[in-house]
Image (cartoon, rainbow, N blue to C red; front, top):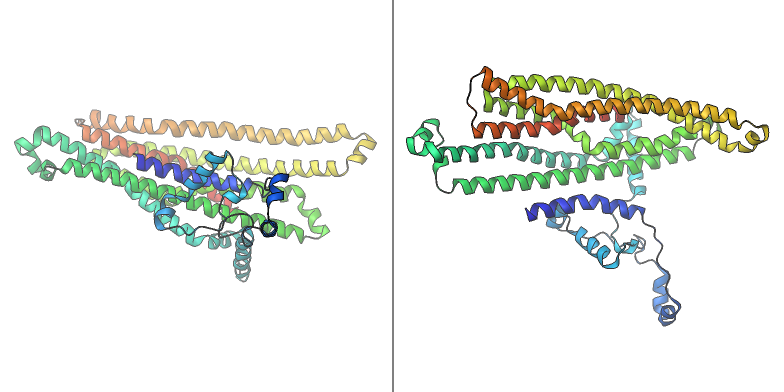
Length: 435
């Protein structure tokens, strides 16, 4: 447990520190007059020069070992420095090996190659920019998925070992069922150790995959923001009049921000269906044909949530159109504020802006109400799924509930809950990014 907590703490602390470092300024605190008088001429020359010419005032990127990269041990020194000094300054953290400028240059080369194709697509160029990182994250997420599916199997074996030691190991039923290995000495310790290893590997794989996904999203976001502003600086007056500052602002701020929001969810699009299929197959092996009741409930919930999420995306698209119109009108109003004040047009412009704002707010309200309904269905679905499954298992099939059956089925249903909840959202986010 301490080791697992250590991994969880370091993995989720690292992205937060990266955000803090990105928001920090490079200004150093001024030295006092007394300290300045004591500085020698050589130290003054070194003080004028940056600490690291290649990385500015930041430390150079550290050469981390495999264990340091796996457990993010370099975060500990940053946390200790922040605790000791009470604040973090730019010279207290290490620079990254990649910069936004280098990422934009790499994206520009990829996009130039993509434009030579008959039908160039921006999302293909974005994917090629982070493809190695994406595949590595998928592999780690696959390891985590396998470890999560292994948990209910090991739990079932532990419960079966307890049941057989109470009865089966004495009357010979364990031999008849082919589970005599559960009666051996030391099997319980081995199963407990296997559970610990599976949980540990699953936590490490999942957290490392999430960190890589966030890193890839940050890299892509930086390249996209740079590409938008680079294109904006090269637009002519006619192009600027057709584009508008509202659209540029949405592209650079809102649309690119969706990459960060979508990064933790998009992995469910890849592993969600496979995870649900394998978990349902394991549930069928545990409770028999009774799993079909829960399977029907799951399909019904997926259909409802998919339809609701699709409607939500339509409302989001309509809301963004009103946002573009509002930002464009507001910028035009601010640019010509003297003329507006001179002719007394404040009331007319205020009425026009508020009309667009009310329409935007109405779309947001409908989207929020629909999302509340979706969340309610998603939260109640696992309970309803368990009720239907066990009702059919006991009342219809006339089976006897055993601890190994109940706890294993409940563990599988709990595993299905997360991918079943986020699979529609992941598909909607994928569609939104494609648009």
